[in-house]
Image (cartoon, rainbow, N blue to C red; front, side, top):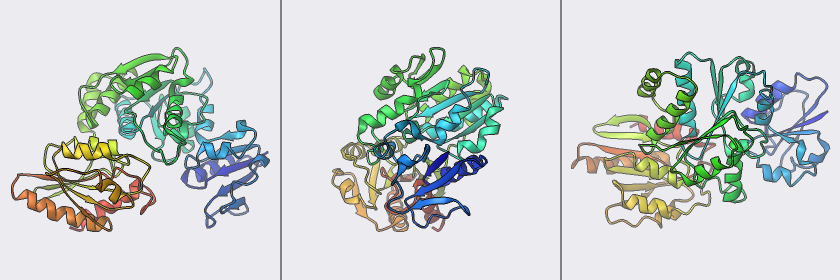
Length: 412
């Protein structure tokens, strides 16, 4: 059998390590990067033409970073296209398998919700695994997952897009437009997300935010038991409410749920407190890669804000961000990155000034100067790094961008 692994990043490498055990398979690694470091003696196709001749393979394992639409257009038999997510779910099809998969998706909040569900389950005495679109690739946890009571998976649209099986417990957090640079259109993005519940059984369950129209619409496509959640809070705390509801359904004691939430520190790069300097508090929200995520971050604070934003444009209309800034406590905006001028055009507030920076270090220094000016008149000021944009104009990913921001703050 001839196998292709499309993309040899972290997931592709983990997949190769797993499937190479089958000595009868002829494994090829296909990657756009001509300088990809490969295992010895493995066959490969690298560079611009790496997707040529896909029909010659029996199974094609697509990494999430390579759009399904692109691959499907280049192959006659679509059933050949697979992924690590499909492979992993295949090991939990048996009715005798007692492990319960909890799949969490959405546009904003899925990482925090997944991590908190996992922590509550763990603190309640359950054997649980956390993977998916975070941490180590899920195939690395296969043996551990088979022995677990619950497997919590954060699932992106790219992982869900070609799925034909859904988790036993599906969770949909806030949904709004995103990834328009990688999906054909908004419908394709939402359709991909819908697969989290589309193939559930009637006895399965799906949780969703009742007050988010897109989340509710996606949940309605599932044949399973519906569990609508109407959050009392906004932003980060609503993720706590969702995690609490899911954990309670799974049998976690209320006192453990409350204690875990109280002690939960949150995830890196998601409204992460960095440090405070003379009444100026720095927050890293590098995972805020779209305007709505940044709006949510802005609305999390009552203090005056100096906002640092900008990055790779994903085809968004930033009008909603401009309006949110006008009606918020944002006093200054420092813009950098590819789309800084596009964002600048949407900011029209007499109470807010804007300036440009060439890089993250310059942006942090400029934000500190502005924050110190405001600090003379108030008790505390927030410098919020929430780009409302992707990171690929200057960085490999949002995590690297967040680390660079924290390093710049630490050097102050």
